[in-house]
Image 1 (cartoon, rainbow, N blue to C red):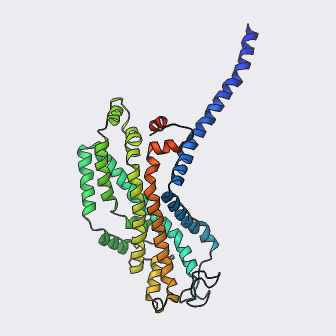
Image 2 (cartoon, rainbow, N blue to C red):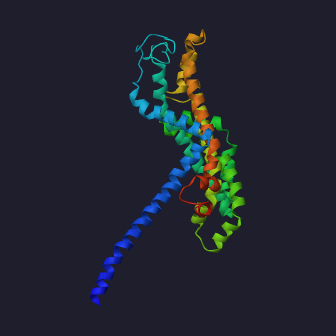
Length: 331
């Protein structure tokens, strides 16, 4: 009897291990398909998101790999005001000091990417936290956060940024990004609060409360997925706001600088005598303008298609390991 029992365990344990291994493998494959491959397929299926992603990736490549490949420009590296597209050494021409315009654009890219990421993350994170808590909790918490939001909305943004720039004198890109969006979160927080006020009375949220699901789980599982398209679109809008704000304030000389910046390039080009005299010298001012426009255009295209990422039916059509009903359950 003991021998039969031992034989039985020897024959079945490998099968059980195989089933467990196979189940874990299938679980990892499903999660990889659900959270990585499916969003990539959704992005690639829409031409706007596809083009926007390629533009953003191109600038990220210039800001990371290109930053190390292209040497920092110095005065006297080349001839003065060499026109664009005349040589491979200076593809976008040179400045009045003989600096490569292409190298100036590339060297300014990392700081700009850090700046827009810090500003967008700061404004959207604060807005989502304040708007969600205010709308879901209600009562005294809602009234207190609404007063704070109203105060932030009533303060003029530009004078506040100029005052903070004069007091703090920010030079680090992260600090500059936060200063530029110091009260930009207020309007988004008010809009998110309005959406959460509607969502908290839905039947599935009420059912979660009746079943005793913790508030944190309700907010994360039931509330946030429904407002993420709106939050993501505003994330991109905040990033565009940081681009335009930083370039404008660097151009006006409001923000101190220690690194290359597209706004500083525009200021130098405007102050130089030869920029507007002919098209042969216009490359100095057109290059940073092209950088601002293309990066902003890429963000716009990316934002127009991102709402599809959070549509469960669209994601289910592009998923290979899950159907629409199962996708609904993962929300």
